[in-house]
Amino acid sequence: MNVDVGVVGTGLMGAPMASRLLAAGHRVFVCNRTRAKAEALAVLGATVLDTPADVGRACGLVMLALPSGPDVDTALDELLAVLGARSLVVDTSTIAPGEARLNHERCSRAEVGYVDAPVSGGPVAVQAGTLSVMAGGHRADLDRAEALCAAFAGKFVRCGGPGAGQVAKACNQLVVAATIEIVAEALVLARAAGVEPALVREALLGGFAASRILDLHGERMLQRDFAPGGKARLQLKDIEIIRVTARQVGLSLPAFEAAAAQFERLVEAGDGELDHSAVVTVLERESGSTVSSF
Image: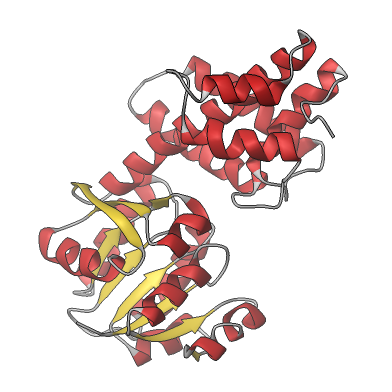
């Protein structure tokens, strides 16, 4: 069933989400802090508005695709001032589980539904309609959110109540960060030991070491393709979310912390705008060699 839907935040993830929603026949209202990014969607049929409040006035079903918890807070302040009862906010941003639970409470007091629905797979998965959504919330809200996300998601997993989606996303980011670092170490080790890294990657993809990160990010490392799909500086935000979540349950994450330190070095070197696969360059500088054969 086609509906009116708002998208607040039309960056790397929000823009292709809005595009898929339009292609599915929904009427889409968009806004973005940098208006030009939202206006690029006008040619596809989106209505461009100035503020989250304008989006909330236009429709009672709003998706957020924002870079941080404070950005979500600001958008919610505006939305909750104008949204009517039984409206729904589907928040695909990556924020801390505790922040998500507070957002659920804020929305509940205004009789507005809220689903924390962070995603994994990147812009390519959105465009292909194969994005993974990990959702937390109440059943009726999850039903509505799942129907909406069908436009761009291949998997919608109900992880539990409020905040559960963000716990799942923290676990996802832990695995992603640690695995990117391990793939980088494997390729640098291959080069240092005198074996072509591209051939090592090809061999590993045929065995137990195979993973999407080895496949996609390993290829990025070999090709020196560090155009951002996931910016390294945003990885630091996710690292802090993982650390806070682990501290709250009294858990240490030694392997993750080793990987996190490498991403911190990458950003300290001034490469925070690069894709997180650029973490391989930290190891390359230390070893004096490059995994690329170019």
